[in-house]
Length: 511
Image (cartoon, rainbow, N blue to C red; front, side, top):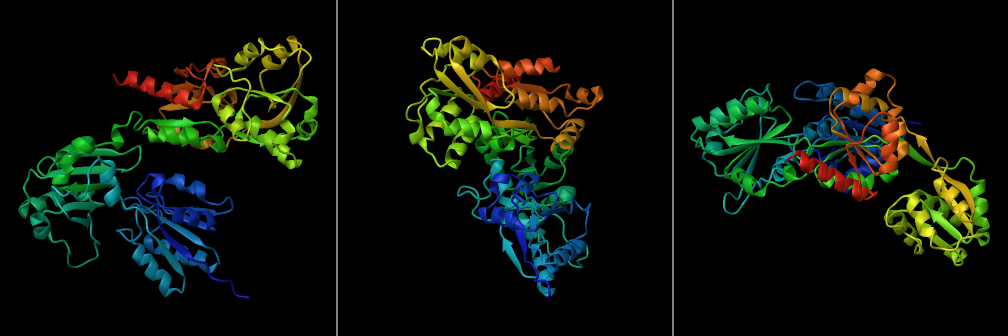
């Protein structure tokens, strides 16, 4: 039986900020058998690809193509004919200088069904992130999008320089950095005032965004001095002058800082989201993964016999999660917990517990085991039975001290933290290219696993000059024991405390 032809989705991947990807585009990437992308599509979007999806990079960087356009067309046709659904990620919008029309025609002529998923074009998004509205009632009510380099095989030019020069429209040139001098020359020769404001925005909407402003008279030299290269867009018109007032994206406190997140990917979203909102470029290289205990029998037995306990102490969100997962698995709910009292470490753990309908009886002011012990010192717990569901590897101080107070402590492994080496090679390459500013550690295991990535003293030297940020004193001690000195230690031992300390550190550095 003949293989049914798959469908090709020509997807606008947006201008660079992964948050600007449309919901429909995300759904198509998740469902695709094959994902084909080029250098203008953010690699961060690849995390939406299915685990079994084939991911193919086709390059196309400023004329230096890993695959030519013809070969890309053939690749799309070949994969679809094999029965695969293909997500073709194209930077910006596929039908705005994205050659999406050519790809669609080729697919159509070869009997391959396709669908176009529009994207946010850099022609609008990059100026917006630079604080430049392409239209403004006080300046201009229309905008022209113009290619910065025409098809070199065309016999006649379609560039109407006299029209552009006399127009009051905002002119947005895409892919025009190499031709900037000619663009300026043609406009001035055709009557455009030499004091017309101009801006170039490179890698717009990303933490690497770079903006250079000037006038038609000065911009070529300023771009040369800034060594600005592709991919950049050129904005020409009076709206450029509004940048001084409206710049917002590159004014954020952590703008451009490249910060490694070593936390487990499933738990990193809050930290990534907040740091990104402050302008940082977050690089997720999880050094740990959270997994259920290899032997779930002890936890299951404890949950089946909750009547035997007086207290449950949760030291992390993970402990709460795996405890309640087990409770649900055996067919019980919170009614089985009515006789128990609860203690927990940290406001996030407290909120997680509250999400299950339980208000913690003890929440210490500082978020470490020693503070829980101090809180229990004012409570009679002699002969009380305490359940402690936590990680397989954990500090011993809490059960030891509670036992000294007369409690009967039952430790059970609720989950395990395992070494995750998926990002090892990526990390080494980033360090070699000096593309990292800071590394965050949210637990001792993130530190020890991170340091295990380095196979030699020479590789460890790559860490020189980095800023290390620790969530608290226990994690900081682990850093020191492994040969790295934390530059930052959170005052409050939470994710928000870590972020606040990063902000304070860089504020001082910038003074």
